[in-house]
Amino acid sequence: MLLSCEDNTQVLMEINADRQDPLGVATNIRMVYSDSLKIQAILTAPKHLDYSNLEFKFAEFPEGLEVLFFDKLGNQNKVIADYGILYTETKLIDLKGNVELKSYNGSLLKTNQLYWDSENEWLFTEQEFTFQDEKYDFNAKRLDGNKDFSKFLTGNLIGTVSVSDEQDTLSKKE
Image 1 (cartoon, rainbow, N blue to C red):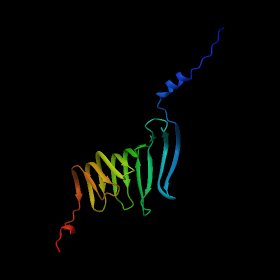
Image 2 (spheres, rainbow, N blue to C red):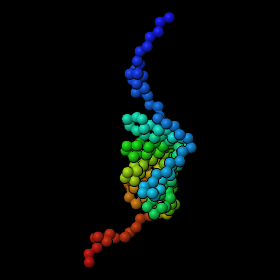
Image 3 (tube, one colour):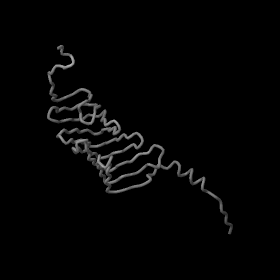
């Protein structure tokens, strides 16, 4: 019988360097995001995969997620999706599958994919979507807008849009 000992540490590190396994897996999570002791958002999900061990860090929610987020006045808004991925460094969130964004004032956005830029509080998609509130009820493809829909661009609209005929006060002569 012949035995030999050698250091295989470098070989094992090279083998594991290409692995893309999550650093951690959690189930039935509830994450509370706060700033200055004020709750900004509450995320719940049945499964969370943490890939903060990779060079391009991200968190994945393969079984869906629900996020309650609060505006400066404390109004609660909700987004749900069948799947979500949060890119840590860019603060970009990719939501897929039966995405619904419900605001406290009753507006509702539905689509199959929605990107949320949390740094700039901006929403965008190249997918078809529907939007309803007290002024609007339309379908379109492509959305690029702020979180409260006071500024947005879309592709071709199908539906009802209320238009005001008010004159711009800056152009009035006194």
